[in-house]
Length: 128
Image: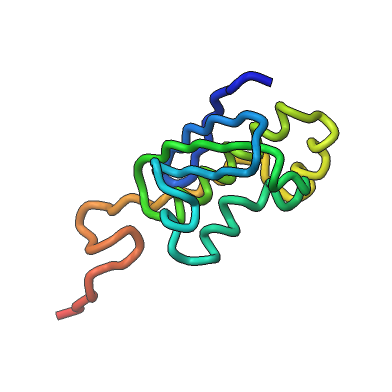
């Protein structure tokens, strides 16, 4: 399998993932996964498709991720990685699908409206 390019998105983050057979290296923006994501929770979110398919040591993964914060970026990496693994092995499709890893999480921040201090918050009403 040659090196392929996959895109994943979450909130305002976009991850471009390159995957090829290898020894399990996981590079995010020229840093290791542990150096880029300080918290174990974000590391687990990003590598969940590998754990579900039991293929942690089979692939070398290189990711370029841009935009958003670390939560959105880890979710974008998860989406791109799930797409890549689905493309590599069709037997993993049902496992990835049952864990909701192939569906893009389309929740976005609601925009602020004019005449209000925020998206939902209103200024205090004064009758007199």
